Length: 308
Image 1 (spheres, rainbow, N blue to C red):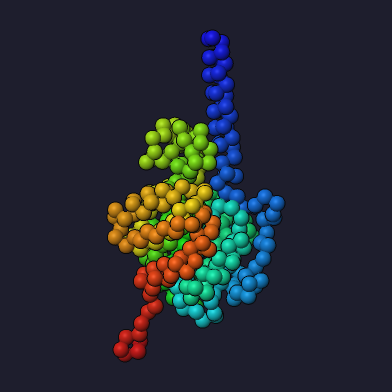
Image 2 (image 1 turned 90 degrees about the vertical axis):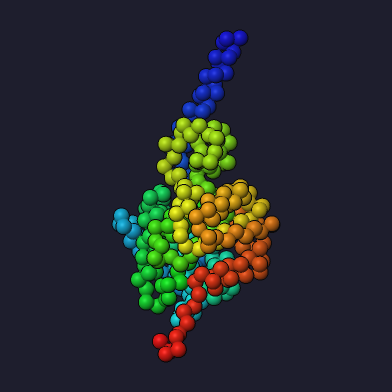
């Protein structure tokens, strides 16, 4: 009996140790997936395929990494809102072009699509601190342009992109007018137990009962729940209730955390929305919700009576 129990103990212990070792060694490959299975790292299409007016933009992050982006305009002199778009963790910006095409039509806006380091045509390797620098480089570029209304820059992020956007918005209260979060997680620490259930006993965020013994090994914790609490700008939360990747209660927790300090928060649920298709299943309600938010928090400047 003792031998059996000992063997079981060592067996379970061995599995846990092996799992932790894999987590330490390969966690970036779990969090960041620039190349989808069966596809290449390069862009399958460009905005030109969808007859969009665009500019190839090359940036350099503060640590010297060369980054690529597409700046897509509704029309060349468009002074409408400019959406700084941050994608999810998998694939590249080309895989979001159909959604962005409709976004431009429905919201009458420009869209700046950044390829994180290691994604698409951008150089380097993805990491939390690196991507935060990438996002800042994109915002600094937009803020320095003369062909857009820089007072109407709005950050949009879905999933990982929401975590990126929350940090950027928090760090730039004078450059970002508002933030839109869609199907975003509270933290990677909380997601670890969702994706690999045995980890919930060892890794977790501040709101969990996890022992948190292994939190220190997570190199990209992306604590959105902490960042959102410090955002002072208006925030729109878009939650797909059928999200199969990020449990919808994560979005409710983010909203509750933000709204406790920020009265300019709006939470909207889409009953049939899944992780990637909330914009599609939400139909006109989805786009109307976004448009109303932009009209309120990134309004067009009006000339005064003197014509200035």
